[in-house]
Length: 392
Picture 1 (tube, rainbow, N blue to C red):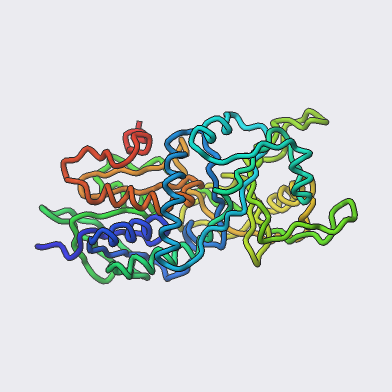
Picture 2: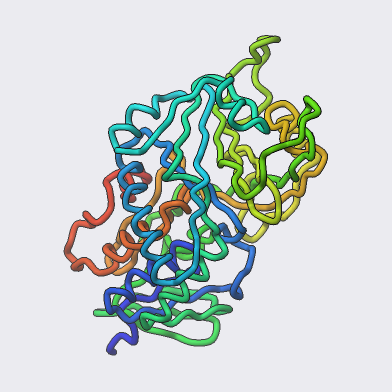
C-alpha cells in the first residue's frame, strides 16, 4: 500500500503544528490529527501569553533561543500576524547558576542593574539580588495567535489539519505506518507523536518502547492580577499593562529578616496578558494529574500564596484581584526535552513548562527527525534530548 501522506502528525498543539508547518514548507505531504476542536483549552498550547526569554546557562538552549528568534520572525512575516512583544525580561534574585556569563557569550544583550535602580525604573515591582535586564530579545509571545499562524501557514503550504480527530492506534507495516482514528484509517511513511500530556497513551506501543516515558503531568494555577491605580506611596502607578516587562524571580532561600525558609515554591514568573492583567505563577508548583483528570480548578492555598507574593513583591498590582487559570506541564525528571525517533515514529515532547518559546525551531528539529533516512542515527536532535538520556 502506498502511503497517503509523507508524515502524519498526531497532536495539533504548538509542537505538532510547528512540525506540520516546517514539513509542509519543505514540500512534504502532511496530515495533522488533533483530538479536540480548534481553540480548545485541554492541552498546554492555549492562552494569550507565554514568557519569552534567553535566561539559560546551557549552551544548547541558548543556541535554540538564537534560532527561535529568527524562526518566530519568519512565521510573523509569512502569516502577517504579530506574535512577539519585545517588552524585555527582568530576572532577579539568587539563581543557583550564573546566567550572565553564558548569555553574554551567546550574544544576548543584557543590562545589569541594582535592585534600587530596577525599582526606580519599574516602580510597580520590587527586586533583590542580581538584576539582569534582557531588553531587546525577550518579552512574551501570544500562544493562541501562534497556533493560528502555524496552522494557517501549514495549510497554505499544503498540509491538512483535522480537528476532532482522535487517534486510537498506530500500526506498523512494511514500508508504511497506519494511523487509526475513531472514524478512518490513514497511511504515512512517518508519524510524529506530539501529544503532550497524552504522550504515554500511544508512545509505548507506537514506538516499541519497553514501558512508558518518564513524564509527569502537573496542573498549575497561575493567576492574572489587575494593575493598581496607586502605588503604596500614594503616587499614581506609572506602569501600564502592555509594556510591563516579563520577569523571573529566583527568591532568596530564607527570609532576610526572619531567617525562615522562603514561602515561595520554585521560581516565580510573570508577564502581561493584554486585556487580562499581569500573570503571576510559581514554576512547576501544582498537582500531579493526568491529561484527562485535571480539575481546571485551584486550591484555596493558591489564592493566599499568590496574593501574599503580589503584596510583597509587586506593589503595582492589586493583590485582591486574582483571576486563576489552569495550565499543565508535562515534565521529564531532568526538565529537558524529549526529541527522538524510533524507526518510523518521532517522539516529540519538548515541554517541561519551558518549551513554548522555542516552538518554530523545535518544529524544524521534529521535521528533520521525520525526514532523515531510516538508518540514520537520529543526529537531528541534541544528545540530551534523545530517549537514551531519559530512559536510564
